[in-house]
Length: 117
Image (cartoon, rainbow, N blue to C red):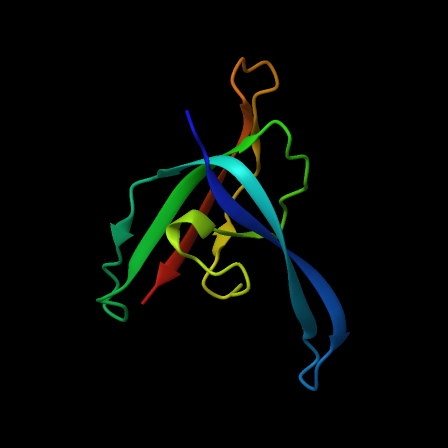
């Protein structure tokens, strides 16, 4: 199996702005060889969001990647996403599923997603 290139966007929090919210800057780290699998998306049926859609992916990370993924975002670079655009990147939506005894080259899986509309 061959993986694809993704970028893990990691936040760093600066001084608060005039509204008291911390200013967030994002740094991108390229990860080669990730396996990306779409999960079932869904259309939102909420009357306030009739044209909305939820998109989700499972991303398996290679054993060579050791970064912490809490509060991070993921850009699917090989699929045309810009790693400099944190607003369109997918959010990591849950804890990392680790399989340390896996005989494969990938030992951690995360779910990422975004809701548009």
